[in-house]
Image (spheres, rainbow, N blue to C red):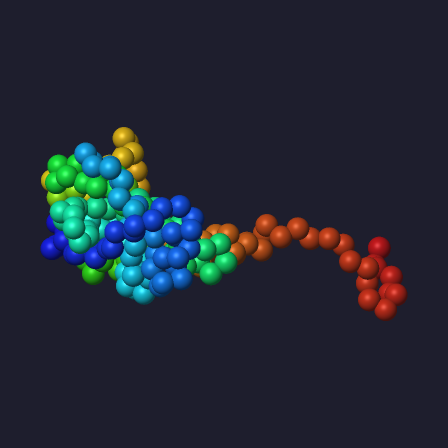
Length: 219
């Protein structure tokens, strides 16, 4: 399960529209909106530098925040979209959705690998291929896992580990309604079968060659 829910400090934006958004950016802020739940949408501003730091840490859109806005009750939110400058790739607007503890949402959760030291396929020279570094799950807002772990401790070369092999946290279900591969142990990519490289002498066709130096062949 996720740890303590981090606070996210925001400021109510008094104006709306493009003019107010441009002014916010000139003041070192990123405009945003909080929507959903039983309340009206709330226009907000976020400190640009603090937001950029959080975005660079990763998992921003998979993190549940406790949003604090002066004059309003604290509310749990999750980011649904980050708009970025087309050239500078810096955040220009952020959308947040209000959540209740029991709200079900779709999130991409990181996949970690366990059992690498015991994996017989890796011991024999195989290579690990993490097919899905993230898996989309339906999770409860109050119980968002940091990650899920796929166990490869018994995989041989050529074996796969699927979502059915993963013990998911309580309340989590995959979005895809079928079994699918998460990780596999493959033969080393540079390894070729000796049968492909070596050819028996009997298999090499022979052709008649003209004798060197213009000599005539014996009749």
